[in-house]
Length: 127
Image 1 (cartoon, rainbow, N blue to C red):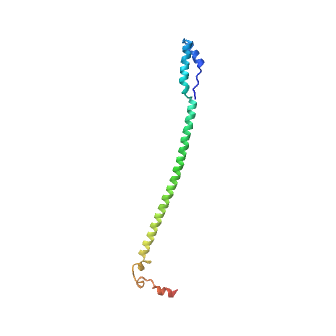
Image 2 (cartoon, rainbow, N blue to C red):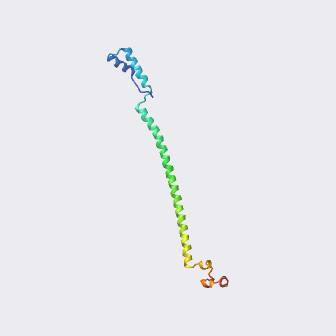
């Protein structure tokens, strides 16, 4: 995008200040050629907005991905915590059951008469 220079007005201004016409025209031509690759503030602002708009869009996608990953990670952690808690409760129930004598005597090799549990034959007759 070329910056705009009124070459005729610039050349006349140089001539009015005492510069000969051919020299004034040459100076204006050199300046005009140098300005060929310059851009206007409006063009620069529009280009920056366009490029930073893309960056903002990409950042929004990254934020969304991070939020999804966070939710997934929290879900995994909560599931693992609940599973660990359930295992601990199961172990506690087993330990409490063995301490209270429920089923522990049979496992320990104590005869049913001493443990208070009727022999299997007596259980069938009562049923």
